[in-house]
Image (cartoon, rainbow, N blue to C red; front, side, top):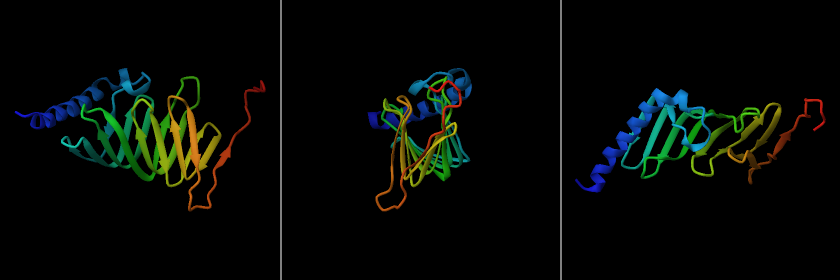
Length: 179
């Protein structure tokens, strides 16, 4: 067999194995941080194309990776030649993100009609078309919001053709120690 013919079979095996392994050990491994966590996908329908490394999931879609949960109506998944996740594009009304970057910090949540989750070394989520990101009572709204999970940083922009400006609400520290 040529390499191009054998690659799709190996890729399908990796996808199948990854989904089976995720189901079997997802809870035990899911406590780790970062990109080493397995990916668990749930949807009503799935279309997989191992020749291109692309797959489409529709209907109440849920992607879980460690402490990261992304939901929406449609998810497009893109992998590299090694079968590793590069990015996931999710759309919904709204698409949602939930994660906890550090164990001692609050849960970060986000909503937008469109999100792109980048799974590489610079793990981040880009929310577009009107996004909201919040932690506890602090809230940020903008046309585009980029949240970098590892650094726990946010970039936000208003739309060029939009009158919408960035809106940030920061609540005072409720711990009473003034810091």
